Structures are given as structure tokens and as C-alpha cells.
Image (cartoon, rainbow, N blue to C red):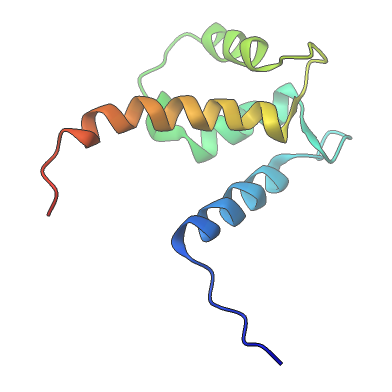
Amino acid sequence: MAKVPSPKEMEWCIESLIAVFQKYAGKDGYSYNLSKTEFLNFINTELAAFIKNQKDPSVLDCMMKKLDLNSDRQLDFQESLNLIRDIAVACHGPFSKLPIP
């Protein structure tokens, strides 16, 4: 029997993204989507550092509407990844200017 290699860091990251999405999705009915309430719980818990200075609650409503590409008032996994991508791209700029250790 062939030995299965240990997951690499990127594989762990992908597994983590899926697990975190599933942790929040489905509490309001559809297990494959985030409702508005689930999205707000997800943002306020998992991305609290990114929104800590955000005082206007309508910004999160606008964010969800922008991410909801099929306008079903829910975010599926692929739609939620657009938020993660946007945050990663925004964070990459400052980090890419740091010297490599």
C-alpha cells in the first residue's frame, strides 16, 4: 500500500477555507450557502481584524450584494472565495515589499 504524503501548507489552507465556510453555512437552512446572517457572523468572527474600524453597518450589506453574483441573497462557496481573494490581494501588496528573511 502506497504511503499518502502529509498535506502541504497550501493543502491545509484549502482544507481550512472549506471547513470555515462549512462552519457558518447552513444554520439558516441551505447548507451550501451563507445567508446574510451567516455572512455577518462569518465576517464578524473570522475577519474581525479586517473590519474592526468599520463603523457603518451598511458597508457589510453592500459587500454581500457585490459578492452575490447570482442575486439569490446568499453566498455560495465560490462567491465567498471572491472576498477571500480580494482580502489576500489587498494584503499581498504591503507584504510583498518586505525583505525576504
